[in-house]
Image 1 (cartoon, rainbow, N blue to C red):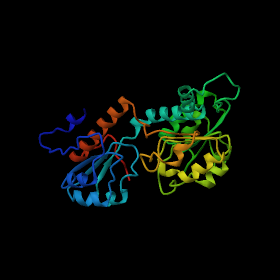
Image 2: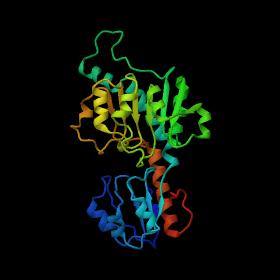
Image 3: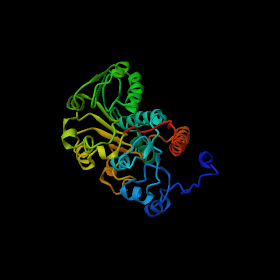
Length: 309
């Protein structure tokens, strides 16, 4: 719907017209000689793609807030500008994170299965009991735009204490009475651990055996950032052994997660297909912004949302 913005008569637009990701071969063919590239999270923009594009490439516009699918050092070296869509998906992703947290902690998917398969019989005091937010301690790893939006939404549920960790303490955390603590403190004291940091060399595999061993065995783990922040084998062990209570993931490694993956055999693990920003309005706004970023990059003007690196 937003392609009309790119139909400048002076520009030739090569379009991959499918909801499925473009194949590697088609991407390499289609990018040859291009001045601009509009890509998705599912497109790996590495040296091979940049070489295939050649020296004409001036701008890459990605329909995402994350940019770990792009070889940023190589892009910078070549002086190519990058546009992204940071602010417009914040609210949708924060809403989904809260929905996933509640669904996981209160065992909603499990409950739905029991209704369908006849497991719902008489009322039982402890049947399908989960964990509530009221009076709890919530820990947010990465209090950036999305982390802050999650914290704002969780506070009215009666959260007693909000802890956060990251590279620096944030002055705006005062709005949610957030307390800046070392990661170890957050992990060991939180009833809910929410991961909303960027994927960087520092955060790759951050949530591993060592991490899960420090969590309470009644704690709920939620990740809506990037799958690679979590060591999934260690998470499986933590969940199957009762080291932690339950986990909700909107992101995995790989994506899609194979249907025979061990995590999918666990009742206490809720896995969603990376739908953090999936509302109709958000996706429309993301498309418009990425088209505007691309056009500005081609024209050499200021982008609405340029990644500075």
